[in-house]
Every structure is written in C-alpha cells, then in structure tokens.
Image (cartoon, rainbow, N blue to C red; front, side, top):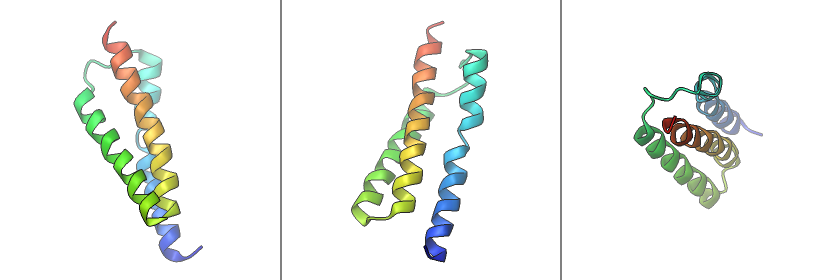
Length: 86
C-alpha cells in the first residue's frame, strides 16, 4: 500500500464516520424534524456515484470507504423517512 492509498483511506474514513453520530442520535431520540431528507438523499446519490467511479477506476480506497458510507447514509435516509411519520 502506497502513500496515496493511505491518504485515500484516511480521507474516506473521515467522511464515512461523520454520519455515525447523527445516526446514533436519531436512533436514540427517534426525532428527525430538523434533518433534511433532500440533503441526505443528494449526499447518498453522490456517494453512490463515487462507488461507481471507484469501481471504474479500480480504486480500492474509494470503493471500500464509499461503499460503507453509502450503507450508512442509506440508514440515515431510512430513519428520516421512517421517523418523519411519527
């Protein structure tokens, strides 16, 4: 693994983990009133495009970190839709 790959993984991990505190807060409180579904939807779509880009470029740091980020953002979108009803 070279320096560029390490840098890519570190950057991806920072972005990937940034949504975890929000997911945990929503999970605990069941409140999403002040969270934008549009923002998380656009973010999730953008991350999905990064996964496709990583696959096309065969870039493992992009593929791995953005795939996990995509999963986490999908959880957040689900929570927003699910808890918005309550």
